[in-house]
Length: 118
Length: 110
Figure 1 (cartoon, rainbow over the protein chains, first blue to last red):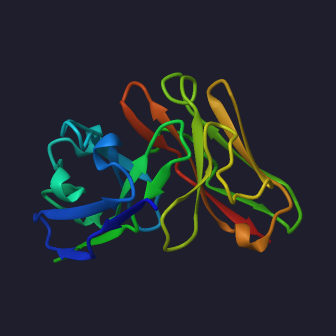
Figure 2: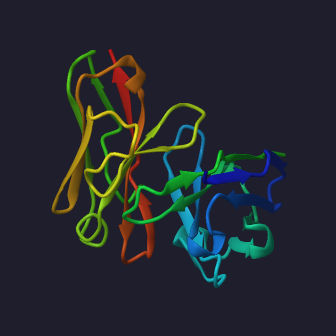
């Protein structure tokens, strides 16, 4: 079965960076985009961008451009999301997801809580 | 400010039917299909409806979706206490080349 397993919770200082991993299994990793979604406490879902694991090509939402970098390691079927210059507004749960358009094959990771605090 | 517009809250009594609306634009709902997600506290979103009105296996037929023009709606009939959750609409946006979400609707079963 398809699974997306994310790395554990992180506590970061303002101005630092965080790197969240997302290990995929149960399907062909290079055949489907991986998307990242942020959810601040009590807030809605905010799409951050996608990475094409086959080519490494990325597309970032404007709100995150310049601060986010999405990468992948196809040898271990793992995607990464690196967010820099963290502020308290980045305190949130970050999800990786396989969000195939027009398909029932939609899967989410369990989420990674990132807390930004001094 | 979310790209797709949903009412922040909705409510109903057990057994009632409630609908949640989702308004977008020509570059998202007007051009592409809509998904709906249910999110229970502390859990990842769960796909409830895909391609406007299709239910994944295991989703009760009490849940239904529709789309017209640049708007979509989710209907829940025979409301149950277990339906209390946050509901999000989502659509692919051709201008952004990515997904856009609604701000979410918190459903309360009175």
